[in-house]
Length: 95
Image 1 (cartoon, rainbow, N blue to C red):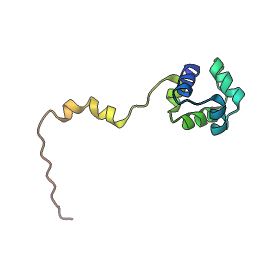
Image 2 (image 1 turned 90 degrees about the vertical axis):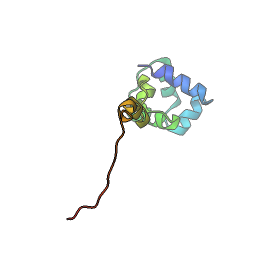
Image 3 (image 1 turned 30 degrees about the horizontal axis):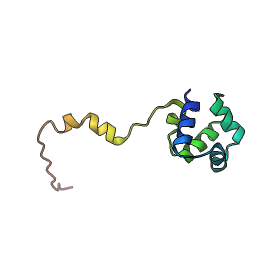
Image 4 (image 1 turned 120 degrees about the vertical axis):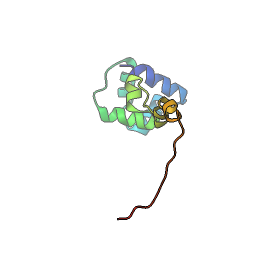
């Protein structure tokens, strides 16, 4: 798990303190210090609370996995989408 490394990095990047994160996320300071020292989290709700406060995805906070956005998905198929000329015709049909 990369929690301690990523948590430390995000706290530093945002210019926060462990106490500020603790107050905002309602996770005890001792718990956060434990995570920063490498202990495994015992409560997923606490992790989610910290991730929400920091504005990151839970998978990123714990494992360093960035969520795939819709833009990334479209970019993967952009060549196929733009491979030809398409015509879309809309017409009213009777019921």
